[in-house]
Image (cartoon, rainbow, N blue to C red; front, top):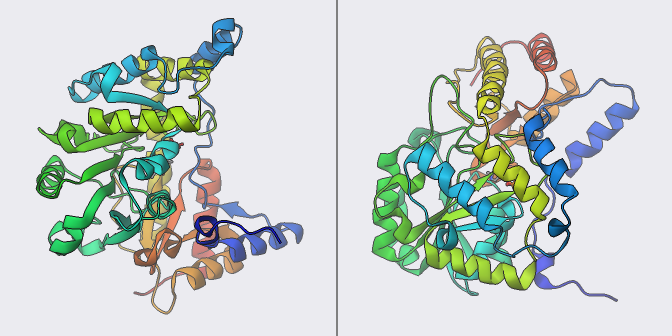
Length: 391
Ligand SMILES: *Cc1c(COP(=O)(O)O)cnc(C)c1O
């Protein structure tokens, strides 16, 4: 019999399988299912970006292998974006690498810094790739709980000294998926001090830094003096430009870590199709009106969800960024039983919070990636069928 490697066998089981089965069954039974589950922008990529890529499809220079670390012109576009947006200086050659979507780099950075037995510091709840990437490298993720009472920031003082000394990597993600929390430069300063003390590479996942509401603008981790000595930031065209399918992102910051990722990539993949990198250049250097527009769309959807839930007894603060609303489950439920209850009663899919780690238990996530009328209808159905809730 064929035997899978242990590293594949140890991958966590797919938590949402049971819910997905029920969704499929309900659809077969003719239920009009509204999914607030998936975090994947629903609107099309802005036209000027598509046009740029379409033209480059015909350029035969793009038909050969690209550079595995990416076109210099794409990396220069990232450096220019950092200069304009954050006043952060980056050397495009040594401090930026093109990624096949930021998830690719987030998964692979573990291979660059973690040996079997090493420790990585991983936020929980969080994007599952931080922990699975670490585990695939043979390392041990150490959970940093993100608690509501700490505004979903990790408590660095709670990390035991011996763990901090053994840790090689720390993953962070603000604005945060799934909690919608944001981080200040003051928090990032504390992270830089901590990482310098223990020689830890900070990997800040910044996928939502340009989707923000109510006038808020997220800072970059790299704005903190000294951040580049111990950290990199992962960025992506996926969310601000509705480009999840294109697979284009980057890592920027510490040149040693950028070089290590580039060396690994030259042995694993041969980089991203240049026509897609041209699309990324058009996104980052072209007009940014579409980013403002799409932020406004998410803000309106967010308000429907937050106001709808608050009218039923929740006491949510509207998140300042991301494409999610994170909310506690009412008294008498856990994450799974509440998601199932909402689905059975109203045909609306929400994501149980424990899918993002054990500290996500007791919460659920609503994604804002469908049109306003459908979100409105989802909230009305929930209100009609569930009514007032208690905590
Ligand atoms: C969507 C998302 C990303 C982006 O991934 P890509 O591979 O760039 O599409 C990264 N991190 C988090 C937390 C996300 O939610």
